[in-house]
Length: 146
Image (tube, rainbow, N blue to C red; front, side, top):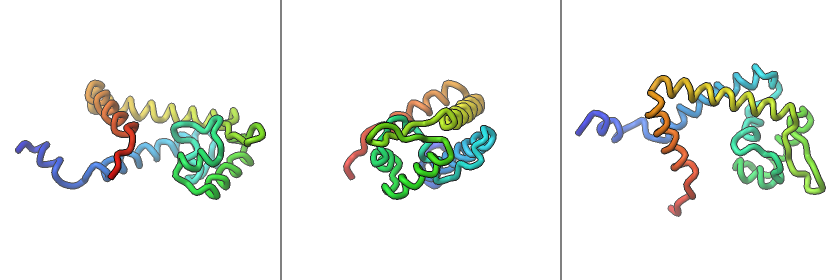
């Protein structure tokens, strides 16, 4: 058995490794938001700026997508509307980013492009490309019944 096969058998397992990478990315996002002037964007608001962005989403759809209760989503949306990051449009109150919200989203994307470039430089562009392909395949695959 090779050393990499032995490492694959025990902890940390995939969930912990994914969480640790997520935490590194999250710290980058938080710093990018602050640097872009979003000092009033709080942790509970970050989900609204996650992929895919809420442009044109119904509040209930956004709540479901973010795995939040409708009440929690409505509260976060209302706060972000008051702060000028989101606006409601039309009779159904569809959620859209304002220019201020788009500025924050672009800062987040820039920080993630930077992090990806750093990780690609660290492990090699080819390995990082394969890593992203595998993540996309796993993350975007339909849920399997347990």
